[in-house]
Image 1: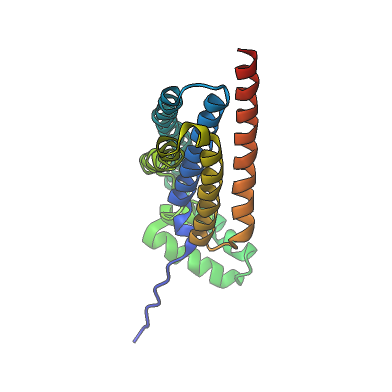
Image 2: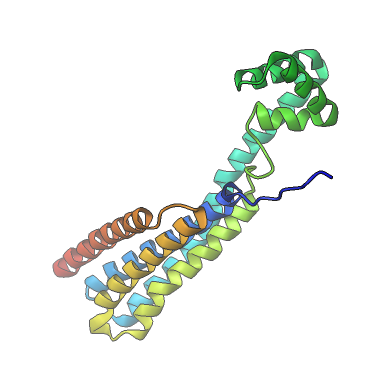
Length: 231
């Protein structure tokens, strides 16, 4: 009896994990930076909250549109390559069979066995074999524009809601401190979660996310303070 060994590989998470981490990270950093910049300019609590809400809505839509366009471009390229491969298979299947066998030979498969493997795979699913082994396109890594757009918009909104909630519940005199410290903690947690989900070490991604978040918030707060002093 043939034993079936099912495995779940982390590479299958690349598409949605990238969009999710990018969206949440962007939501925290951009909204926190916006709130800090407005608050540093000595704006009222109402104006700070309005700026944060506007940043959340605009950012979520921007992330969705940007991800959709970007991943759609990748999908268009993949589809164009597959269409060309389909034409080549129809016009010269023997050449394509040899090409596939040579790919396996270059990977260390013995010549005769490579010819047999190419023959059998092309008999079952010629286009799928060439898409996977020649073009590097598979069901796991294929581009999904709608999924990426929705994931980015949703996670951006969740990320942006965190500093916005801090600004909402904290007294006006503590807004800058609460949003700064809280957002850095959120970013650290996000970095750790993303690293854990991707199977990577936790420490380096956490430090990286927190550092760039602190830099962005610091620069924006400084600009806000300068304009507030000038005004």
